[in-house]
Each structure stands twice: as structure tokens, then as C-alpha cells.
Image (spheres, rainbow, N blue to C red):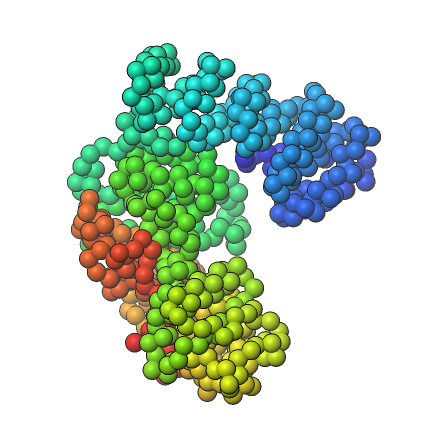
Length: 560
């Protein structure tokens, strides 16, 4: 989706359009506010009366268009198409009609109506919108793997270069038929297209050989910096993690240079739109990238993973805890342990405790999605090991009365996965009331870490699962905090530390193992000299280091 679409509606000049009465303008502003906040259903309700035929003022076509966008956001594609058709009928001379055509093409592509989509795009006259339309076309056409369908599409649109490019690439990949090869040559000559030796859905540029022998390493950082929205005066940003992570990487770059390892950082502003990543991978300079961190959103991340596989580099996903991106992508690594990994390591630890003898487990989880996902993964491990889950429920307010465990139905251990501070003490209070004292595994986020007092867990054996554990007694942590504060005049966030560790680790690994990076990852666990808990990619593509802590002399330390 073209990002600028969401901004031209808010121009003050538009709100001064002639013929707009005060009530209509007020209701329109309210609907816009709902849309911006992400409450698309409420926005639809507010916009519906504003699209009535009786309104012909300057804001009416914008209300139609916003209604179509909100319908698209809620997957009501048919309704969105109908509203755009109504908009074109009522306001045929609207000055933003190219944006309507663009959105109609997007909807047609989604519905696999490629011919109709191309018809819409052909009618666009604005040079700016045409450029975005070409990127949109690339995204959808490059997903088509049916050569016969593409050839039929080309017969209808013989001047379309993107369709021709995809036909050429697909023939080179899949066909030895003489007629197909002749068609490939014909299209190559007509459009001046050089067939890619190795192609994917993003048409990546192939790297030169022996790139890692040049003595320095080019690291791509593709994160959602949202530079168009950046304001130096804005103190808190939803994407602050991207800036913090990059700042940590810059400090790791200086550390690597002290070790004789030269890296160059190239940052790319990539958000949730796949077109943004397409622009990056089709940039000639990007072909020299030796390692890629990010992007973080699903569709751009898939394109990055495809690129990494086809260009023999590694793509590091810096945030996700799910393993979906790893499927069929051997060169993709997760910076963090996945939900499955956390569940596996945690369960193996708990079942190994002498005090955890028995084969019954109680599992409680909070209301956040990550809580339920981790709880389900843990239950899966419990079931696979032949243990019995005697209680599995959310941490409701009345958990002490709803929980089914008792002195006659004792769990050998209890697991608590929650992002709600206070849920940890709530479960412990329930156990105390029921006179049960099994070992308890809990996510650190189930407590208020800043105000935690050991008295809260008195009488219970508690272990914390904390993938963001920072041992403040480590000298390198204190040194980093001091350097970061002197440079930024603020305390480093966990993301700054993650960025520092990630670049420091992979920079060292590239320098030592070069084209044999996977071999180096398989060699051993790397836990020394890092701010957090280290890295372990032996026989895995997600980080296997899962910190489990125990309280020792008023401090949380790694459990042995």
C-alpha cells in the first residue's frame, strides 16, 4: 500500500474545502482519527453516513476513499471494491483518481484478476503514482509461477516489461522447451532484458565471488526507522527499538575495529511494505552485502530470506520468536530463542530438578498472545514427554478458586507464562492458600522487576525465564553502560545491548570463518564477552541460549 495515501487526507487545506458544513467536517475528522488509531471497524461506522449520495462537498470523495481503505484493512475486499466504484461514478473528475486506480489494481491483484489490475494501472497518469504502480505490479507478478498463465497475460499486454521479465526468468528456471526458449530470446531482444542466472520472486542481484576475502565486511541493517516521520524533538517513538539497536551496533563496530575487524554498516529504512525491501535488494550497491540484519515485518522478511539463500549470505531476524520464517530458508537465523526453544529448554530444566519428581504439571498464562503461545508450546513438550497436565488456564482474578490443583492432585512443578506484572505473585498466593510448594517456573515479566522484593516468593522455589537477562556485575556490561551514557546521555535499553551483542558476535564469526560461517556456528556455544547471555546455533537456526535464573543472595543469577 502506498504510504502517502494516509497523509494527504489530513491537509488543512482540504478541511477548508468549499461547501463543507461544520457537522460534516467534525464527523470526518473524528473518523480520520479512528482510522489513524487503527480502529478500522469504528472508522467504518463513522464514515458510512458520510458516503451518502446527498453529500457532494469537497470532503465527500475523501470519505469514500477512507471507507474503502478501512474495508481493505478489515479484509472486506468486496465492499472496498464497491465503494471505489461508487466513488468513481459520483466524482469522476476527482483530482486523486490515480490513487483510486492504484487501490483498485491492488484489490484486483489480491483477487487474482491480473488482467483487470493491469487495466487499472494503465490508466494512471501521475508520474509519482506510476512509479509506485510499477512496484506494486512487480510484487504480484513475481509471485506467479504458472508459465502458461503468464504467456496468456503477455498476449493481452504485449508491451508490459514486468510481465515479460517474469516470463524470461521463469523459462530460464523451469523450461527446456524449444518454443519457450525462443520466446525468451524474443522477449530478451525486444525489451533489452538480461536474464538472471539465479532468480527469485524479488529478482535479486547476484553477488561477486570471493566477496569475503576483501578484508572488510559490509553489514546491511534493514530496520523500520520511519525517517519520514522522524522528529528530533519526539522523545518516545513506537520504533525506538530500531534506533537503539542501530546505536548499539555502531558501538560494536568500534569494538570490532579495536580487534582488527573492519565492518561497514549500511542502514536501510524498511517497514512493513514488501516494496520497500524490493527497492533495497534491487539496489546495485546492496549486492555487496555480506550479512543482513532485519527487516522485522513478515513480508519484507520473507523477501530478505529468499535473497540470503540465493546469494549465499546470512539473514538475521532480530525480533521474531516464531519459526515460520525458517521454513525452507537455511540461511536465516533468529537472534532470539523461539517460543518452541524456550519451552523445550525450560521443561528440560524443570524436569531435571530433584524436587520436581513426578509427572504432573500445572500451567498458567496471561492474556497476551505471546503468553498463550509460550504456554501452548510448553504444554506440547509436557505431553510429548508423557507427563500429565493437571491444570491449564489463564491467570484470572479468581484463579485461587478456579485452579483444580490440590493436595490430592499435586503438580510436580508449576509453569507461569505471563506479561502482566503481578501474575507471578498471584499464582504463588494461590499455591500458598492450597498448601502446595512445588518448584515454580515463571517468566520474569510476571513480576515487576524494578520493584521486586525477595519476600514476594518467600516459602517457594522459583525460577525465572528471562531471555533479556543482563548481569550487571559483568565488567563489560558496566563498561558499555558508561560508554553509552557518555555518548547518548541516557541509559542503554535492552535493544541497544542486543544490537551490540549481535554485531559483535556475527562480525567476529564472519572474520574467523568467512564463507564457512555455518561451520563456525556449529562448533560451540559462545557465551563469553557478551552483554547478554550469548549465542548457540549448534544444530539449530534459532538461538538456543535460554537463561533460567535463580535467586542467590538477593540477586538473580543463572541457575546451574
